[in-house]
Image (tube, rainbow, N blue to C red; front, side):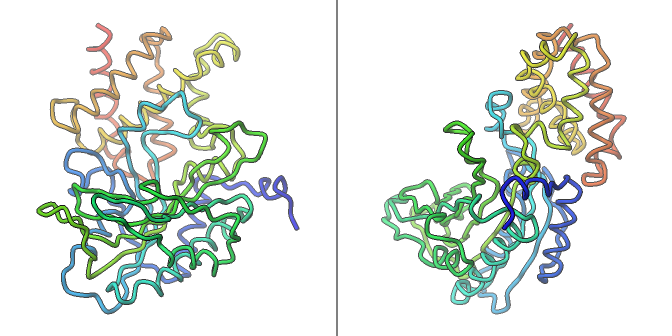
Length: 376
């Protein structure tokens, strides 16, 4: 049997991971969907926070029961405003990230059989296609608890599916309460979830040893805003997904997500503006913040969002403010760093997100002009 270190040598790049995922879901018969991107009507005041959620809601909100299963997959781009506060201080957080998702929707009377199939596919993707050892994975599940005014029981079908997929009991951690139950009142859906953690080993301190790399979400209940009730939906969806950047962090054996193959070149560009590696190491939190802000701004601006007083515009303004503050702090205001980062982001992500190539001239102008306003 291969050891952890031997498995870790089977590193995978960003492009290789995308290829592995796409070939896997194609072999399994999932229909490839177009990326939703950052702008989704499901989240009118935010950017897309969850991969493929728009497709799931189309099925979930269908009133007539769906007799034949609808199976789909996609690579999607998401942005979470709440994660901005962690940038630079966390080894795992980035604001804008990518997800690889596959799912199945069907009438609720048939969903349990498909959950077994999807859980098996998901564990197979992780352990066989991506070559992550089973003893490096931990699955947390919903063990019941009070949700709103209801005491819900544990989700046995998900736990049983993990057992059938040959996940040992020691790697299944049932948790009571809301920790493994999503309740999105604004979009009227909720259900139990299973979070998948990668165990980096005992050499990592408490708090950074286990990295969440994926999840399984069971779209089971409708939230009725009129009466506050959770009602079983006639059609239910089971969604499996991995965070691409965090999975790369695990597979590449990197201490920080900013060290993976698609983010390290951006960090390297910023590091050249320091006198030596010691100085860069001291201010690494600021370096990572600059990288995260520039990358996020480039993607968001490519969608035509302006740094104005709209809800999304205010998020963009905050990103640019964080960027300009860090650049002033590091005395980089007069450097060419924005141009260099712009070119590298376009080179790395242009094929996956073509809009950043199509809009790249406008992106540079918009970022540069706003930067000049902030530093003047």
